[in-house]
Image (cartoon, rainbow, N blue to C red; front, side, top):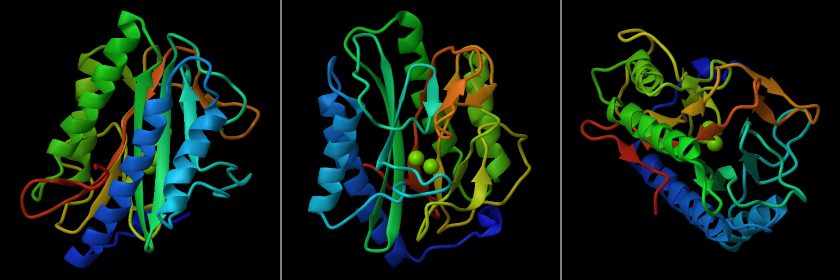
Length: 255
Ligand code: MG
Ligand code: MG
């Protein structure tokens, strides 16, 4: 470990390259989103993302990451699965909510982004969860300005989510991103305003609210990757890689 302290300030030229990786990552996620319908397998989603990356000379940093080595290019996490679900034979069903997390390495730089979307008609609770989690991401991004600290970003996410009656994970965090998928600073989804690392222009951070309906507690399934809510309540995850600038935060992982 140790990546939490490894903060790397990027030059404008590096941020341009991260923007290119982020744009391609958004294309891969868009290809996956188009496939979300009942009967499609999670392996089909992985194949669609891989195809987009491969065609552009890129690959996913998720593949072979960690121990045991992560076996796929994206994570697909359904309903109570919060993050790190492994694609396979499972078929999507009407009413599922599906979190898709994709990483891209292009020209030596990483883009990292995720969304959660419904399959067909979803419950009012699921719809609210998706809205709150996505808004929490933008509430956090809005705090990514010079003069603020990482704790201001974390606290804004936590306060927004909890004001809406949901819970943020304590186990998994946002992170710096650049030449590698995980750099400093670590940016949890909970925290105290005025604490943490001062934000500086050229910092690039993957911000990723992970939100649970029932409690903040999670556990890992026997596959050693899939993280679920401990009470099996619904969960959602949205993520963008974002650059801190002298002015407005710059979202890197969009088309
Ligand atoms: Mg991610
Ligand atoms: Mg991430």
